[in-house]
Image 1 (tube, helix red, strand yellow):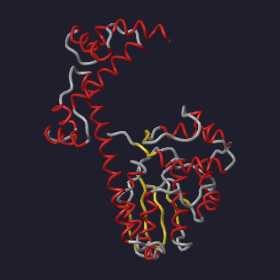
Image 2 (cartoon, rainbow, N blue to C red):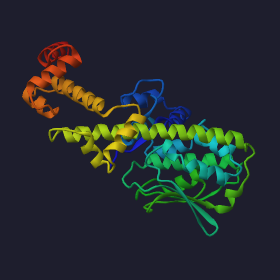
Image 3 (cartoon, rainbow, N blue to C red):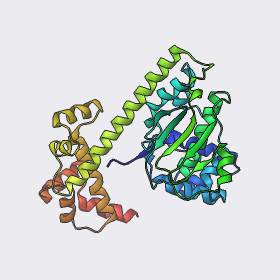
Image 4 (tube, rainbow, N blue to C red):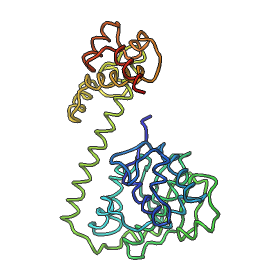
Length: 332
């Protein structure tokens, strides 16, 4: 299963909420190994959410930190998905546009909209075991945004959360304006379906086309990075067994080798370059951070002979593996 990631833009509102709550966000970032002043660009592993929210809870002194920070979120954050809402003709149209590109925010949001009689169900995920603070914050952010987009017409009826234990019922009611049901089968937001027909005062078809075009480009970039990441991970797994070929990786990805080569070309990388890059990085790490014998490193990096490994490493680094190890460890 591929690793789940979140876009850094999803966490920027949380940084703003930390600041609004009186907590220094730089202290939280420092505790998770990030420099002060904000978050780096790009995407990061969803698993890192656990460490982030633990640091946030400690710095805030708040057990239910996701819910707590949801109460300090502003309605708008300048995200592309918000512009899709604003330029659509109705709230419902904007929601359907945004759902097509929700992966720009996070891989964990298996989002979809269902209409059940007079109520709408916005399903946001089915990943049990996820850190509870993340969905609790996200539910609050969505409610605030939807309330602002519809000029107060949006009123949630229930928030469904998958974790079995959480805050007292009155805390959810105070932040969300509706009850929260814990231990649900999915992470979802329930509301009156009639609000989907609420018109947008900022509707503009030309802006909507522009925003969708930008969203498509960004989604294509996310998919490009995802493919390259998957190929790198499979190269690492296959090298343990003595080699990693394009055909082997393509088989693991359930696609023809020709198709994989074409997709990597579109992504701007070559398969052989990915193999070389992985071997080089792994060799340097093993030489500097372990005392493994060179023969073992040769095997782990997928080379058949020590002499071939020596020649490749000299070509990569301009020095032999022994010289690299000696110089690197002397500098530590």
